[in-house]
Length: 183
Image (cartoon, rainbow, N blue to C red; front, side, top):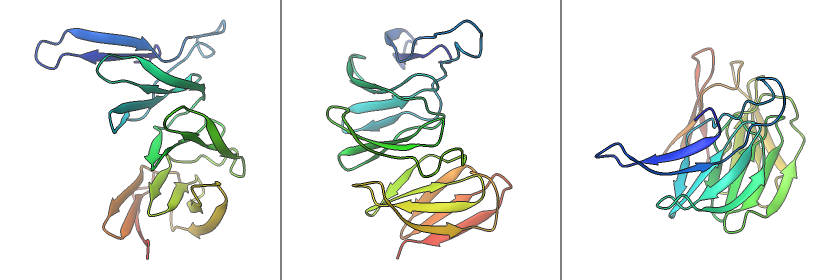
């Protein structure tokens, strides 16, 4: 919800099973107190991962709502999971990696500050993000170092990535569609 709460409902009766505050509003103005949970939640191997604007990156036990770990991270996008890592793009466009088990920060990459990055897509030993200028940046997932960059024919961070086989499709904000081969 836009108030920083995550709520689980019984899908048959509509009753609240549990609710957990992911982020607490702070500040005086409405803008300072904004704590949206943006982007889809990620459920992987029995753990729910959620990130929020002006809030936290949180790992939650989905049946009980118990917080397993939490890190102060403000993000507009959903976290991405690959192997033993959770990746998130902050609201300032820093790419960060955390350990899935305990939430320990593994690395951060500040090379793309204020570039309007998309959600991270992790696949086949590489991370990809799209920036607002239409560049796809490829990073190595264990250290976060940039290993490649490709200019697409459109502008805007776009909708993000969809993988199909060995190809990745990128839908731009201008409705252009690009295909990248991972081979």
